[in-house]
Image (cartoon, rainbow, N blue to C red; front, side, top):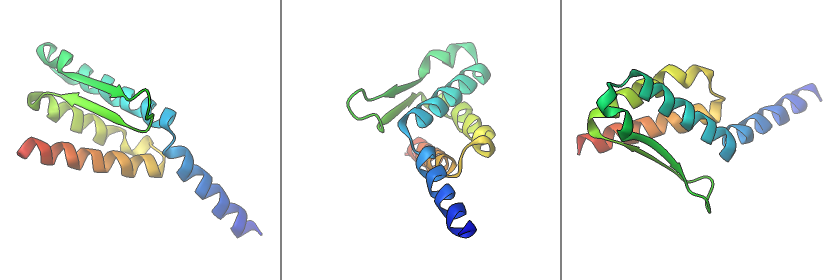
Amino acid sequence: MLVLNKLLQEIEDLKLGLDPSVLSGWYQKIAGDAKAEAPSHLIDSIDVIQDPILPMKFEFKTSRRAIKYVVEAIDRNLDEMPLATRLYFQKLSELIQAEALR
């Protein structure tokens, strides 16, 4: 029974990590950290937009010159995130970097 309870708790933690409000909080934290590290002329080029109709849909707007600061902010925060959130932002980081190379 203890193993089953532990498994159920892990599943609940995974679901929580992908909750729109949790993701939104991490997007805001990452955007804030990236803005804090970026030079002043790049701060306005970093923004996160959450779709009001589809709350799981986010758009991370950033200029190519600010990508470095966004990726560094993601990397710095990964260890603090729940597992599912961490995997989500690791994939986001990969996508941002791949897009920058195009």
